Image (cartoon, rainbow, N blue to C red):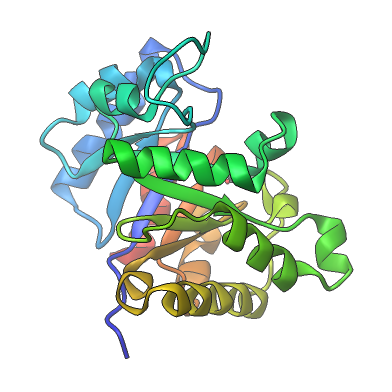
Length: 249
Ligand code: 13P
């Protein structure tokens, strides 16, 4: 069996954080430096804080990422940020296709794939998000839905990408799928990836996201083919974020 990829615990701060929040990041950096977890750490603050956070985390084991990018490297796209710009600001990764972008900004699988390609082009790790709605789960359509999203959203080259399975109904709700439901979806994602590319696909980290907390992290992270977490609300507090990462201590 292929070796398990090194886990990644990533925080998605969403539209939260001001300059003063650098103190929270510094707390993560300080604690992670003195007690390094057995996982890579990534914090994705709002774009306004990327440069500041990258500076504060420099030389530490904490990497800084972005939450979205445009498909083009530059041009007349008022208000948008390219993957190249995010890299220039200090990001090493970018989340693409988060369900909030898909539902609130009308992003299609095609858009998400183009954004993942843009991340690859710029040398950023693309974290490609997929996940079913409550209706899809109740209709027994989860596996088909995720397969369709993978087929439409993944870039051509899988090397270095990350996939995040985030059931829409689990985000911010306090609800999580059962361990066996997560095992089924993550197993299918792994199979899909290795069928596309045996070598690269076995190295892709598959994160689980949706109501991950310090209290449930150990159980969720123990599921086969769960190679880390994509954490929303609980990533805003250094103690909670590190409490989740401690599942890998
Ligand atoms: P919560 O951890 O707040 O449920 O959010 C998950 C998420 O959307 C991370 O991208």
